[in-house]
Length: 200
Picture (cartoon, rainbow, N blue to C red):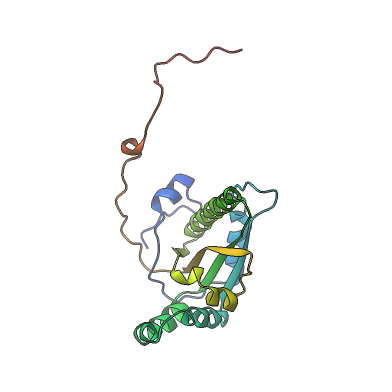
């Protein structure tokens, strides 16, 4: 694979080099490798007194349970078209399905803060996985909002899904998508030549 050769890549290299992986090769991914990712990823910032997230993980034979939960949300026509794909991808090539769940809060602001914190956590997972040559695709499919799927995978009534992550090993790195330069998206107030404010 066209990857950096150093054992531990820099944060900048991980951020710029990371790619979303959709083509997995089916090589077994130990469950403890995912557990290690999560132990580091949970250091993402959050606003609430306690972490707003929890995880539901499907590996090994558990992938069948995940696939069956997805099937519950599909029409007969969609299953006729996609069932073989679901079986091959979800139960064979992809080695793990990780659902990141966040608690709902009565105040909209608290809910937004929980979702944003979970997004930071998910980015941590992606970067930590990339450092270990583990591919991730972050999905926000319609089934993430489907109560039939929630019941089947164990999402509680006071929770919502921030994202479903599919993980596994891969053979090739996709080409990078173009990014707009931050300079073109930046609105800046102030001037570098302005004198620094005087100390009080």
